[in-house]
Length: 108
Image (tube, rainbow, N blue to C red; front, top):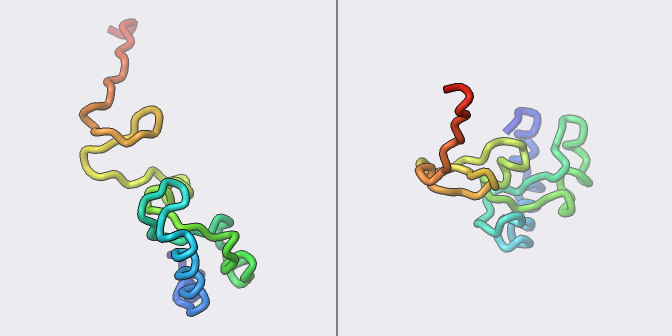
């Protein structure tokens, strides 16, 4: 949590809104259907807009996400359990089943 948002995320208004969004979305990630644990702001909170309830507390700007989809929403590689990897299509597979990269014979 970024320092400028600490007081907001501890506020009763946020706690009520977060609980409402989790109920609205049935506790499931709206992107993949996994159990949701994070209420995500679609339009990112900034020091300039955090006090604007039309952004910070607006249900249309909020969605329930699982940790993996939240990471993807922020452009971060989602966490995976040991031994798992993403294939070229974005599917989770066992790391040992990943195809080996083709060897370019011109270099050997």
